[in-house]
Image 1 (cartoon, rainbow, N blue to C red):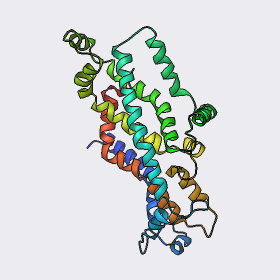
Image 2 (spheres, helix red, strand yellow; image 1 turned 90 degrees about the horizontal axis):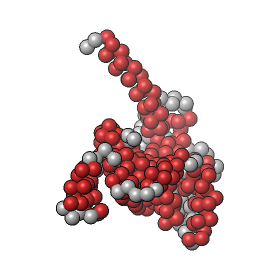
Image 3 (tube, one colour; image 1 turned 120 degrees about the vertical axis):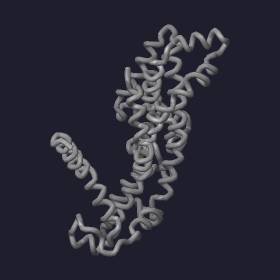
Length: 281
């Protein structure tokens, strides 16, 4: 191995260690009891590892005035993320397919308007979206949060799919049309089988964005419908009793665990999807 390659590996190891140190501190702190934490050795391994903090964070930690742990809020996030990711991905796929291969008068302007939606700050749409949810009777509901994430996510998913499908030869569409295939038949038999990379990228992107969202969750949720990010904030800022850093760390890892698992299991497919043209254009 040349010294240049060794230097590159050394730099990569240094940056990997920098990124992993916070996770190491969180994990080891969550396995310590509160007396050991108060001794102040932040980087030391736990003397007697215990899962007490994890159990309390999941089932009995106080988030504000309620002490039921993160479990109900975790499942709220699941109820929000699953339909929002599926709907925004399917709508984005059909939009991208139509804008790439079924162009019509004004299609470029429509795509530009959708693209503009990618750059609108979250804060700008808070009030109009709140009025829309109130008009529809969906304020402070899980369905309302799903609708918000679908509306905001469609701009990104349409961009991903349109840029991926525009590289598919149009001759395939014309040949299928000559054989009598229609809009949905062409999408199902030609575009859907080659769409695994872009579906992987979009699903991971949308899952991460929606699961980690805090702003929409804290603004549009109510009692019983809050996602886990809002509950984590309430848990960490609850002032009842002494501060339990081990419970806070366990709660933070529980909140981040789904996205960590997704990236560990499907991270290489995400990179392959990006290199396959998912974000070109």
